[in-house]
Image 1 (tube, rainbow, N blue to C red):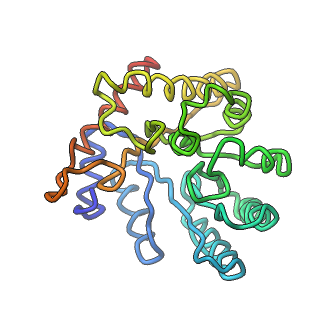
Image 2 (tube, rainbow, N blue to C red):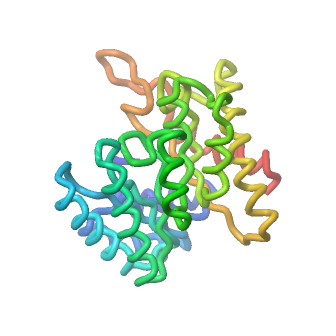
Length: 257
């Protein structure tokens, strides 16, 4: 929906039966994001990012961004934290920054599993889970599938430890050679969809056993770049919007909600 303003996007999202929006809104757009989602009775998740390859500058921007976003009192903040090339100690510092902001503001901060971040693979995240027991995740395991070039069947202990601390789902479906299949409705991706759905089922089962009132899921099949395009014309091979609506309906049917 990159071509739409927030108002039109929110109208379309509401009409399609979603409960909220997850928005990467810059400092100049956050007031509008809050107002528009409120006006359309939608929940709001905001995203945060660090900045730059210089760790000191990155840490300051990350702290300031989290603190500013927390002022808007979103449902929670989904953070892209650190870099895969920062040291373990540096990435832990950034996670501790987020924990401090969460305690200061009362706004939850989850860390997305994502290529290029501290959380770029299932094995890489294990040391962080041991070092920082408070660490909570947004589960986008499609990235891990891509990094591992497998559906992670040979490292389910790693995945299960992540599932135990994953509190939000990005229902993107990856495959061994990419973070996003071209169309999860296609029969050739049946096994890929089922592999991911079983992980999402496990997160939901954990929530149900804990009698948690809500589990949030963002249907996050991305645009051109994530979504393959036809050479030269750059036309997407499938409709991003239709795929995301399919994912919403697929999970609602699977979970009978």
